[in-house]
Length: 155
Image (cartoon, rainbow, N blue to C red; front, top):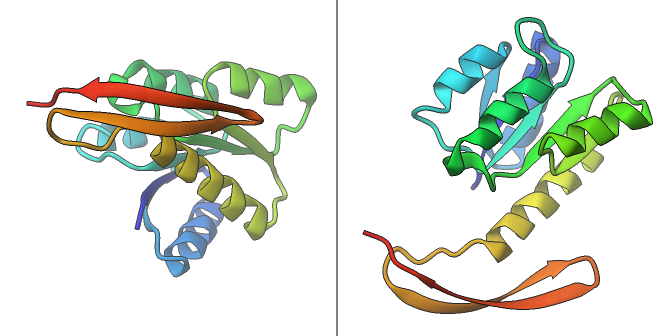
């Protein structure tokens, strides 16, 4: 099953989300501080990231920027989960690189659906072959269906 990094400065919420995802078969690593999460990313490659926005030390927007700066994580699905629910907050979260933005309070089904959709999209659009191969895939972006053909060379 996919692995998920969960970042929220509220321990109870981090635990709640972690348990919810683990019961669905996900491997979860929860963090309370953005700097600890960034440090963990040096040796851990999650399949998705769920982060709060409003946190001490560093806010979730800066955390997302730093994650996106690393080419290893540029395409990893990133979901904000925040009490900041103004339109401009949501827009800013999307502008820094989030794939989705859910507001608190949230329903577990809503978070699970957002996560599953983002993981499916990432899997559909990402090349998987560890050797030279010619791959043809379809990538759906709303109504647009694009046939993608690429050659991948891995060492």
